[in-house]
Image (cartoon, rainbow, N blue to C red; front, side, top):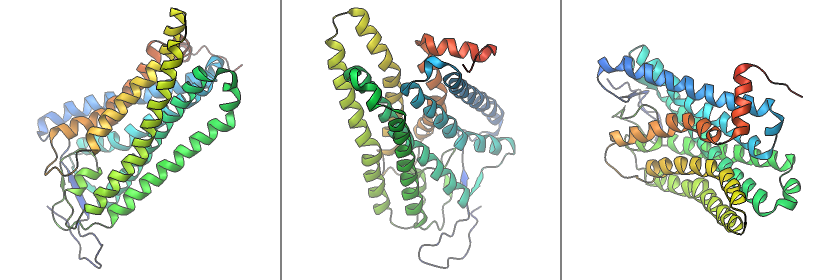
Length: 318
């Protein structure tokens, strides 16, 4: 049923709530989906908070690279928390509706965290560039003030990105269809429900994607071109391996993040959402945050040692 209220202006919405179809529409499968995503949520939050705790308590990890990694772990916890708990609640109480205001709030926080992710990954690439290509001036160029400034800029860009999309979406009319073929509110699916023209909104999304994702990606690629050139000049095979290993984890996370993001937002204009969109959404909001702690700890003995001490409760703040 479409709940509507009388329109009182040209840009006022008539739809008061949306229906999220979720991942599966068969009620018999909802308990299984609930258990799987509850497990994924607990693993992701637990893994990222463990990484954060290890960075805080292990003196060896008090470096710029791990400072940024700690902030990335906070973003991952936020990203999965914006989408999964709400979905679990709907599965638990057999409800599929979400209010218009709650939908906009979810959209705002999702794009806030995604925008911050873009610039934080760029800051991490810049850190690797300085560490490998400018080692003599690394400590001064990547001081605590610079680190804090880069994180603050990431926050500012993320907030600007989220506000832009949320305000622009609020100008659209939603006067009839209110069924979203997804498990959370996002721009491509909401565009398909609008009763008014979305040309300007699609153009704005394209421009913001270039600014928020395209420009950082160019900076990341440029940084790693310089890093690769510097590493190839290292004569020692062991030295090359060590240098590449410090960048491999970050490059893996960048590829996962940008790969799913490009697929999700560069396919505007399609008539209907598909199960592929849901799969990409799961990968973007659930799998990525769950994989990041594993990616950064898999081949890093310092992180593994710190995590072991966190788990065993044997750490010291000195």
